[in-house]
Length: 226
Length: 381
Image (cartoon, each protein chain N blue to C red):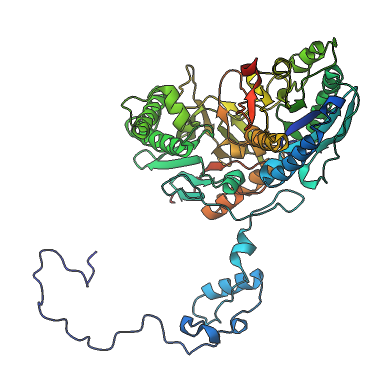
């Protein structure tokens, strides 16, 4: 019989923009992912509770790693720039991926926290593309099993309005300040957020529990700069 | 009883001069022993040869030696110790297939008064055996944060009632360890008062919650140096869950009444199965976990104590979610372990050791109180 209570896990998805316009920043993103990996390895209790997926998107989505236990993972495969920027393709992918992952983890005997998506982009989706509809379906908790919290980080010169629309709450949208070390800032931010989400202690309750996200160093809340 | 070397206050002093010499030399504090090879002399450290004293024998030899040592009237060789009792006997018990990574815990920081990593307790009344333990979780040991859980228990001799309280300080609060400790102590004090006046029963649950609520607010006021700390301010500082109540011996058996605020829980072991009775995290409609909780100082509008008879052969467990989460529905590995190990009272240190089991991703503080109704023939503790 499958053990019914093997542990509590948080699925984390890094959804990284690999479109051509990200060419200048892709090395920073790769550095940031490497730092995030290292930082979580230094937090053994936190690392044990995370299953990590890295997805690169442009015209389509390429799965770089899926539901990996960071403690046993080698270095992440590198993101590479390619093609255009289809937010629609990215969100459509998550609509099928996340429920499948949640069901898989539950079938393995784990209990699952609401997934978190770190969306990293320069905020310039394909012109005229309707990405809002799949985004709405993805984040509707009545439609998608495990509808995620999306924390959107706009890389330098990102369009703040777009970034704040992608984030599931206004305070989850950020744009990097000019001159900031994007890779280091993202690594630090993602590590802190992961730790806070999966900490075993509880949050002060309310009817609708909410994820609390502090502003990352070097970033500005996207809504503030509109 | 009078002790011959003590003097009653009204007796005149027998002498005022210097003490006389003893009639014979004072006996040695320990029986004279021949000098033994291999006894460590700290003043001659350089000459010490550890091999002379190190028997290289294992724990089973030590346990046999200890048993021999206790048997009277037979001179026995001095028992030999295992290489490292702490490591061999008290290593955290891992329930994972792979060895769990261990590390030296960091001391708690942040201007605290003394806050021990682990507390345990145990005693028996005429009708009940009690064990209590509260252990710091691995995440707090890693982070150097204090244990935020707490527990307290007391006995009223006139009615035989045992009052208990378990609390889990909410991590979001700034001083959760103070909140949980205060909630437990004030709940137990108030419950004791009520059972003394109520023939062993709790008479006013509302007053219990009000007492804890106001104790928390008073403490918050002292910490914040304000005469009237509000509820929200108090919650930000001292928020805590609480399960508190009483086990009362009656001619029909042990009657239990418990009240819970927050997600700390109550379980029972019965017919060799452990099953939940109250509390615990509830998954949302989509089956995902939520860690939010509505704790004290917020007082629920509607509350109803859980009341039942604790039957002989069953065990009452009251604990925090650090225990409840890994136990789950009680049918997994952790539930089976506790159902098996707690069929009878275990020594208090063993109880704490059991509670400190290692299980991956379950790294919260854990607190548990267990009560066993005593067999009728065992009427004396």
